[in-house]
Image (tube, rainbow, N blue to C red):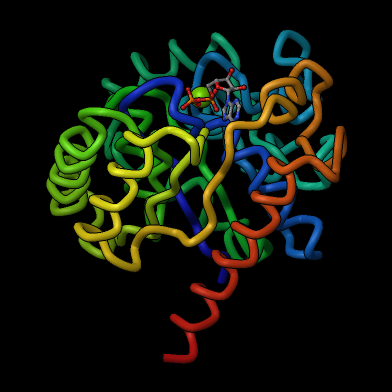
Length: 259
Ligand code: ADP
Ligand code: MG
């Protein structure tokens, strides 16, 4: 059965979407069957996958609010060789409409049931807030991957996020695990970043991925070409780092199932 990983951090601009798109593409490049779910009304993961958010036949709105079958909403053509559940501005309305429905926290989980077996990995790109969409992601996921920048106050924010995840999990999904913590936009010449990184390892141990995502302009440019970095510049440090991360995520998943 496919592993569902929510990529979440209530802070904006920490690299959630960049991680979602590039990890999905790297996984797909290893011949895994991958679904990327864009849950952010900004639709950045959708655009970054080469799908025009202004011209999509269906979005997660159709899945969550109108309860259309996942198979009818999933787009199979993306620039990253994975499948996509798209998002755009309509998804803001989904968040509001969901308030009124029965079992509103578990809509996504139930919607994914029929397709979960088909995929090896399902990644969910969460919006930068802890709204009902994020709660749906947490309820549907097996684990949460937290991208973060190693800057001042990062640890405080992270501890708060971990508490929130635990609280959410206790009522919608008691089995929810922390998949890992990913250091993003890393600059090894920055002393503060190194200090925070050390503290992070002391505090969270092997939950911190060995792979570090460097600050790399190719990762920032790739979305304007509507493609993951590996299909824009495969020799870039950014795309290599996400390939390494995919390897690490796969190894963790394999160790977990054989343990
Ligand atoms: P979030 O989804 O958490 O809001 P994004 O992935 O959209 O964050 O990243 C925020 C901005 O930083 C974007 O403009 C993105 O292109 C850029 N960015 C993300 N990761 C990197 C990186 N490793 N190196 C350089 N720029 C990056
Ligand atoms: Mg984002």
